[in-house]
View 1 (spheres, rainbow, N blue to C red):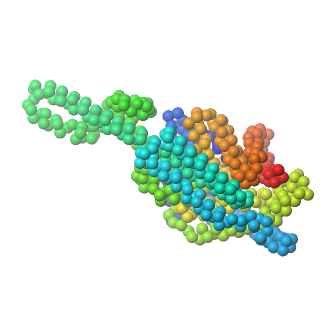
View 2 (view 1 turned 30 degrees about the horizontal axis):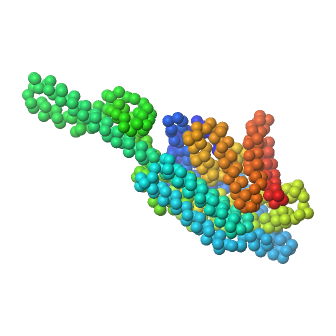
Length: 541
């Protein structure tokens, strides 16, 4: 997924408001949002936002929003039901059974070991919690040793899963599922470690600044104390000793208002300069800084470290919080997520039934329309591409619906995760850059924060180079999945992914850009041709 460059329009702080698609029922949703912008000493970087939102294709959403196309949604599923019955009948007529063919044997092979392996995969993500706990206890600094340990453990996690998949010699179904789930878990633990590691460094900064601020207050009070004693000595020439006793009651230590007035009278310096100088040299004389600037820095750091319950980091580093994060359908970790107030069992049941029904259609399409083509040596590659266009597009739409509308929403309901915006209207895209942002928002958010923004902050790349690096990494990961699934190194998917770059450039040509319908038609043409071309390339190689 190729994230877009941060723009100035997205730099406003997040408001505690809901989007137009948010249900108004207070029983189901709380209006909670998270901060989406981070200010650095060089620039402001955009961060993904989480707000209470529902998914666009959820029937409940379309009914509440009075969507004029909701009838087509109903018609689509009636047509899909009829399509399933026709395919079932044709498959029964052709081979005498609808289930139990080649694809079914692939699904059932080594199924128990696959389930145990998948459980072990999820359980092994606990190394992330142990590592973050070490940061919280102060046993290890995230910078730089923690980062080295983090990436070494993540590499071992990925290579072990791949080696296990190859050693078990699973067919493509099990291999694809296990590899994709491994990469998903890898992204989740990377975000968990990286975000908590950054917070651990900010906690160290906070302690240093608070210490300097406390020292500055003591210095200011001492200065005022000395000035008051000098003034009292002068006044003692004309007044009796009782004047000193009366003045002692007015010292700043006993009057916070007077104490604050002392700070306001001091020479002000820019907060950024004061904080930067202090963090570069903690042993510097803090009396050279303005206290109000440091106080503002303390407040800002505390806001960034504040958890859902109001306590500061590491109050969130608990087993319960980590398990909750594993259930939340988000690939980026946050201290606070918008939450619903209850779980609706019927909603989870509906999504489960929809998953089962859609998966049945997916199975019938693959068994009846795809397998007979790709395994028939008499069919030429070009004819195979043409024959597979419609079946592959059907499978693409059903896989999208299963993952982002059914599974993500079901886990969101179980974890009371209120932001159900896992995709946007990608079907209206006029270019592949827009599609990359809209069709898979969880991955887009991960790449935006941990690849795009990180490459700008850490390696000082330009926005253009950071976008290219993000796209390149995404292409490599896609090809890695195909290498594990097919046991071949062909780089077809990598090449096709990278070919989107010139397509994105072509989409910005004035002739196409000024004609959205033409641009959308070009986009859909690419979507129709790409998947069957890949399928034929890997199967015929």
